[in-house]
Length: 205
Image (cartoon, rainbow, N blue to C red; front, side, top):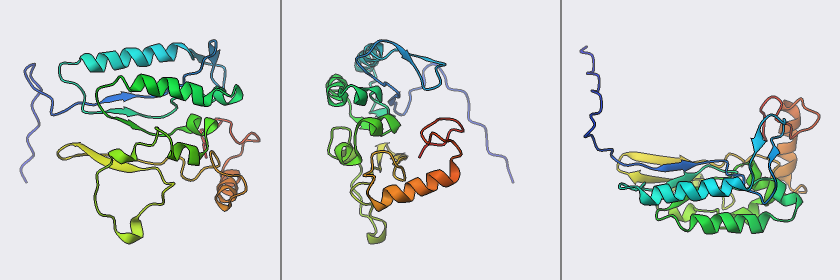
């Protein structure tokens, strides 16, 4: 069998098929600088807003602007909940995103659930399922309304899939619900930490 030819290097004149922006872990809070859970990394809570503004200005000025931007979660920090500032901080960041000239696809991380319930997120501006491709689903595979996942095609032959990483989780779920009890059982079976939310062992559920 003949070997497949190796693709040649891109020349300086090569044009990309398309491009997209990615931003993650903004973790904004109107707080003085602090540290992560382990105390090993400094957090610049207020300054993260400036980084977001800079990224948006850069994307808007691109001669070939991105087709979309992926926001990969942890848009505000969990500390906001302790200071009853979750909605205010989210509003500030979402208003900043409105300056962007292209669509933004939001995913949900653990800090979203430190601040809000799943029901709240489902009905918030962080739910961008309206940007999904409208295709027919088989009746047996139609996801529930609370399952936050979808896919879209930013360019022919390229499909992006956003998954609900916290579908099975105690975060954002009513503690009295059967699903919470099911997730808690799984968590206790597989997480040896006394503090179930500890990052020791990198198990998050």
